[in-house]
Image (tube, rainbow, N blue to C red; front, side):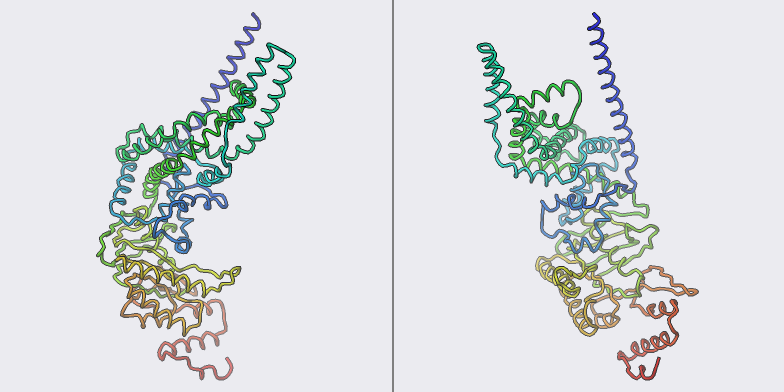
Length: 572
């Protein structure tokens, strides 16, 4: 009787402990989800680990399509940083698809209309948004690597067969039967076979353990799909049908993966401990792993489609949240997709999305734009601002402006190049290669009757003045002739005169007040007329003879277009 009471007490204790853990986990999940729901429409707060972006870009690398944003343009616009301010995804599928979306402009009106419909649905339907956010939170991330990297690693396992495991499992039953005929021989042989199975189990489980992460994520994909396919999401009815088909095709994986994944969880309840011993003795999860492996290898396309569809769905949630987080306002762009659309860009109250309290500017451009102005006056920031707005318009259908209207563009830049010391490549060589790629794309786009929008900061700054101006003029002329809308910042005032028939001139100016310099960051029409380089020398206490001599030489050059050596006679 005492033993029964003790056993009952132990059972009650275990039930209470497990119940308390379950309630705590439910409470923690509810707290996290409440925070997630409340964060909709607020800036992203996630901290990224070093190298994490290299894995987030894997979906993009696995799904190349023509005319994606190239590495030079992406880096010029600091798009990794911008991506991180946008991304409020909860899952790896959302992380990777959002990155892909930002690097893959849409050139089809129908596709963009579908995206806008999905964004609008989640903006207007809070309950449904919460439901899918909960599902994506459960899906989570893969850990250190992308799911695509994990799936690639599966190829390293080669062909795996279950014959040897089944053979030794049958041998165990033979040994058990032998024990009834000859107990000593049966027990000895049973112990030998058990030792063999356990040794093989630990050896081979160590080999497959790194690959179980991919199975675990596929399993969570299926669980996420199971939740989403039963939700009322009329904006995603087509996607739900496709997800259901993918789910059904992987039913063998769902059955065979349970034992493998439950053993990887490290669960400490008594039932799992018993199952662990059975796994070791009979190699159960090794057998199931091989079955699951065959199923995954045979359904890579379905796994990819699930990641794509779920990524698209979560990206629609993220874009809606990002729109609501832009305190300085945003707009849905007006984009002309027809072939004969005018090469005309109209943008009002545009600002850089990374700036707080930004100065907004407006512009209408029907031909190229030359930007002049002093250092730090805002030229480069304005180029990036317009470029990001154009990229946002054609990817996430959102602009940090009050109005944006333009045709579809292929977008390129050449702004933040560097010397390649290890490759033995000079800045100038990197620059002319970068410019050449834009010229080549301009010719191709011209034949395909689509416009190119490009941004250049200081054309050919890596060479001498005479050749820079001569070559820059011809390159900029070529852009104009190829129907490329080019925005270029330059310090070479000569270009504003040489290209006046093909480019509109704008500038940013500075103001010097009480021995200090102030930049209003307002876009002004016409070329720059003021200079601050010499004024800055004066503010820093340079000798007056240097200041006055430099000012006189600069004024004479602007009047005559020539440098006068006679001004250098005598001592300074």
